[in-house]
Length: 105
Image 1: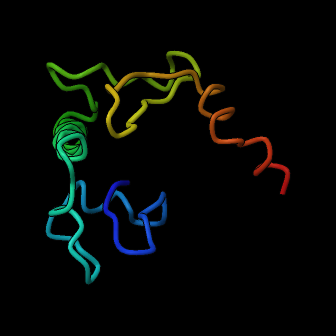
Image 2 (image 1 turned 90 degrees about the vertical axis):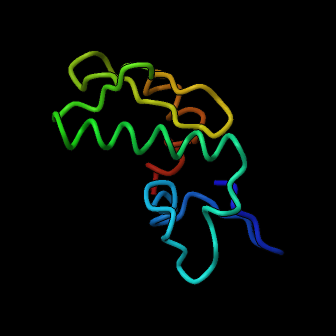
């Protein structure tokens, strides 16, 4: 996440996604107003996916990459800021985030 404050960079903490879905959510500090262009695009795409999911039960949006079905294969949707949205193998995600290490605890 890109909202930066002196001495602290927003990480993947609990509720860190909320400003992307609700720009007025600030938890006492302005967050969404500090988004760069890539973060604003991510917020727009996240709202589109969630809106489609609520309306249809499927998160697919015309013009955006197809959200993989759980029945497809073990894939996840990458929502990395600054990258295009795309499905990635679940094992690549696990390797990139050192899940084997965290699963050991």
